Image (cartoon, rainbow over all chains, first blue to last red; front, side):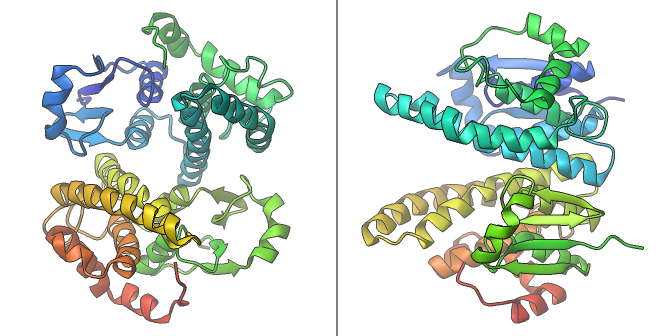
Length: 204
Length: 201
């Protein structure tokens, strides 16, 4: 019998959205539990969790933490991880590389000084992104997949992370045709498309 | 014929040693290519994300140190017996992985004042992290389950750096210390430690 999944996180996209997208793409049911920031429920739960952090995935009687571990586990459980060990490794590689971009985005988001923030944004757009997207364009196929000829969690992860860049720079994928196709494939996947319409609208 | 594994990194332990340890513990042959920074300048263009380490197998190039290590762990049977056990091992590796860049930050700081500042930060993070891991660790000499998995080797690897930084730290964490001792007692690992190039980090 299929296990019961309960995902617990704050009421934001943040570090849980990739997992939510994977469940949506695979059409697998799960409980999408959300806490507000500073909630009493989280304060009470925190000491009972493996590492005092969210997101958490409860799978029957096992508790998983670490957002990428959770996403990878769900990708494997729903057939979105890749069809061979080598494909899985290439998908892992794509997702790991995205963490570098996310670190820079987080630094921008957290920067309170407007001038410093502007500098970081300029560096991102002018120097980091062209190099990064250049690498990723070569790794994606013209059909819009990072791995083989079908969607994996690598494609969905790229789509998810890019969702934090496009508000700053809507034309960021101009000239990167393969990557634009990846994004197009993901957002038009039926499960994902439905989730994008239904999901709570949050700032992060 | 079994795939030929070619692992390329700098002549350091740092982000390459976990993978070397996994091949070693499993008794699987691999080409341990170590290049200097000059050679790297020529090679950089051909690396998928312009970074090392890199693994080449069956004509495919994999980068990202933990993706490589996880793949090699799976290939050599050291990843975990079920999907869930693999996720539990991943969980430990994710948490331990946060320590390496911080340890590197302390080790490579050229300015004494900066080094002291970073060491203070690192001490705090180290205590927090080792505390969390001690709580979750198995008590039989393995972080997860009842046999050697790659997460034990990743802990052993960072433990080596921690011991260079502040000798005896792990003795305060008995379960983790037992994991490290169990890895040290592994014959293949012990032989590798004795013969591997001696590098500062």
